[in-house]
Amino acid sequence: MPRPTQQWPSDMARTVLRRARREQRLTQRELAERSGISQNVIARYESRQQQPSVAALERLVAACGLELGWTLTKRSGPGPDLRFPGPLGRRLTAQRERILQVLSEAGVSDPTIYGGVADGSEPVGCTVYIAVTPPAGRDRIGLMVASGHISLMLGAPVRVLPREEMLDYGYDASDGVPLIPPSDPQP
Image 1 (tube, rainbow, N blue to C red):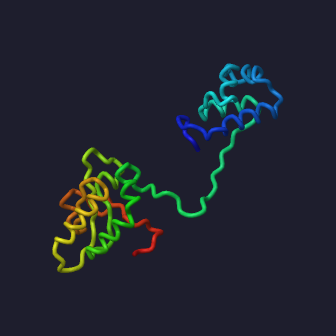
Image 2: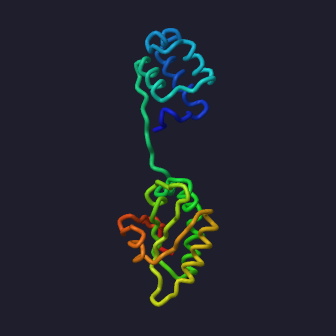
Image 3: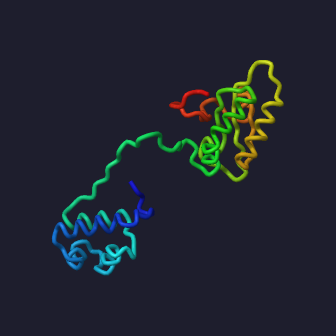
């Protein structure tokens, strides 16, 4: 449901309002008297000079003796990944396939995001912490190279670390969000 501060699609509010008013055979003046919203404002809504809030449109429709209903339908195909809602998180999501490729080339698996990107806070200068499972006996050079490549992609500091080191940064396993959504197949 749109929030009251959001704009309606260009003709939607006008169409709903006019249809409700005309179905009840009301003039703008009569609707104004019933709703307590001035006739001038109603005229601006119907001429698209002004957009009503959700609350105002619901009030006008109710004054017509009708109820404004909302329906949600299942999307065809996957929706947006909203696990990382901030600006940096959205960049991370947009670059996910490239990031997974860099991590695969480094020989690591099971990437999990920690820090401000994972919890949605994203403070200024936020570092993206990516916990991974490296192969046994592998040196840290690959992790450092992956950190640098991903940092350039995101335009933010990135630390790719072995999963067991996340405790050293104050995070435990429950603080992380897998980079690969549960419904996606593992690469």
